[in-house]
Amino acid sequence: DLWPPHALDHPEVGTPPVSSGTGGVTLIIPTFNESANVAELLRQLRDALPAGPPYEVLFVDDSTDDTPAVIEKAAADCPFPVAVLHRDTPSGGLGGAVVEGIARAGSEWIVVMDADLQHPPHLVPELVGEGERTGADLVVASRYLPGGSRAGLAGGYRVAVSRGATWLAKGLFPRALRGISDPMSGFFAVRRSAVAGAVAGEALKPLGYKILLELAVRLRLPLGGAPGRSRTTAEVPFVFQDRFAGESKSTAREGLRFLTHLAALRSASPLARMIGFGLIGLSGFVPNLLALWLLTHAGMQYLVAEVVANQAGVLWNFLLIENLLFRDRRRHRHWADRVGRFALLANADLLLRIPLIALFVDRFGLGVLPATALALVTTFVLRFAATETLVYLP
Ligand code: GDD
Ligand code: MN
Image 1 (tube, rainbow, N blue to C red):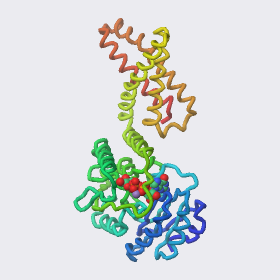
Image 2: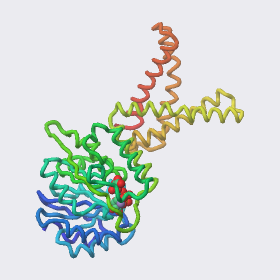
Image 3: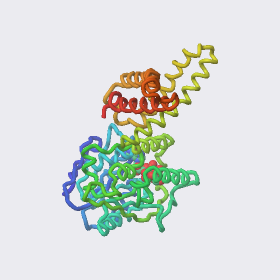
Image 4: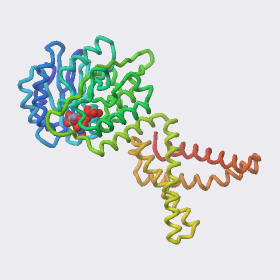
């Protein structure tokens, strides 16, 4: 047997079922309060999955309802092993659940799908078959291929948001997402060999719904990852169905998380991080000037106001840099330590600029404007390097 059946007896315990096999397919299904869907899903999977290669189903569950119990009951009728990994302390949302599932899977292929029947179960063998046929490492079920559609995306608003998100992602990662028409899809098959190393090495930082985006961009799957290995992507069209029961678990907060996820992916390289650092720095003029206006209008002496208002810009920059550029490097120091160091650097920057300009003008004979520009660039690079190493450990 591939799967220790007792794993189902203790769904509340995180005892992971670990499959042994070479070959075969592990279906990973994240669930959050899907008790009205899982029995029907398993019923349809029973009809859809061939007896052929060994299939196993692993639910990664963050529910607060009785979803695990319903799964356990329905699994009794299934000819394939079914297990539930219930997470008592969920992290990373949907994407985090999928990554935990991948870490537990032992099959050659991993298929990720939703539990609400928006992803047609009969396509599961087709996704794997397409991978076997083409040799691709990643097979994406796409709504944007001829034959696919977004039928189940109720309302013009959701269609527009989905379109916009796809364009944004493809615009930010044109190379990494080449060949993937639907990077927002939550339905795909991937060879375990292509992702297992990254999962084991904790190279993935899933943040919310877009786990395919995380895999494709972080692992550069469509580009050909490691030298000498050509990784390819294939796609299969699919019609996004209506939800069988219940409502989408996605919220406005999830939309914000998506933007944060994009920023985290985009700032993975030091150069991109430096550009982000510069842009955030520029945006800091807005709170700085706003605070200056408020303080002087409140009657504060203007030079004192300058100093205080500068801190508003510093705080703004700090919050954006923390959340967008150095998300996963925050844990190395206490937050108060980070604010202190950051503010110190920002103010040192101002103090350093004047003597630097004087040096450029007096010793190197530069004009005042080029000297100022050069000083700005110099202190910017110094400050970025110091932030990288002294505020956030690499
Ligand atoms: N374990 C776990 N933890 N599962 C979750 C969580 C979570 O925090 N949040 C959602 N899920 C599960 C749901 O129970 C469901 O099985 C699946 O993830 C998808 O959630 P839905 O709430 O149904 O998402 P959706 O229909 O709005 O979005 C789906 O389609 C989008 C394409 O339009 C997802 O597949 C998205 O990834 C996809 O972009
Ligand atoms: Mn759904």
